[in-house]
Structure formats: C-alpha cells, structure tokens
Length: 98
Image (cartoon, rainbow, N blue to C red; front, side):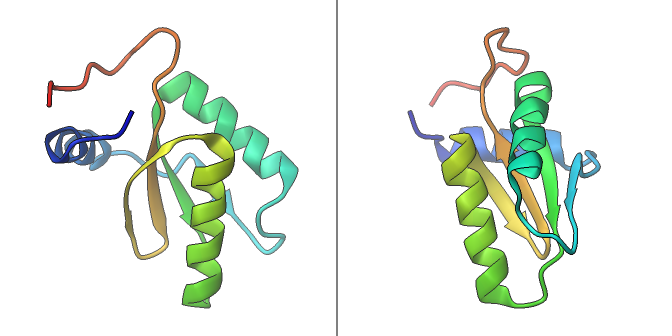
C-alpha cells in the first residue's frame, strides 16, 4: 500500500497541530529509540519525530532508516521534523479514498 497525494495532504493537515512524540538526541538512533517510535506509532498512528542532526546527509540517512525499520509511511519532513503514519489494528484514522 502507498499513500495517494490526497491521503498525504489529509495526514499533513492532521499532523499540523501535533508536537513531536520522540526526540533524537546526542546518542542518535538506538534500538531503544526505534522501539519507542514503534510503540508511539502503534498507539497514535500519526506521529512527529524530531531528528537533531546538524549534517543534512546524516539527518536524511537517519530519517530513511526510521521509515525503513518501522515500516511506516513518511508523510513529510520539514527541517528537523519527520512526520510518520502507520495504520494500527484499531484504525483510529480513516484515510480518504484515492
């Protein structure tokens, strides 16, 4: 499954008022941080993660790793903020049709 532009825009609107749930600090991306992101996605479905890396390439690599390891969809990233979506068993967010 992939997100259509309409669904992505809908999720961006929902995520606009959200605060980051997980903040990556000086230790970077660890197993514990990935587990926390996974838990947050299971509970909220739509979350923001703040990646505080100074180097653009390192930041992009960390964001790609988070998306790949969690199996979530990257809704958007602006600056240091990454917005992720992954449907849970309960389907709390109903996406518009394609």
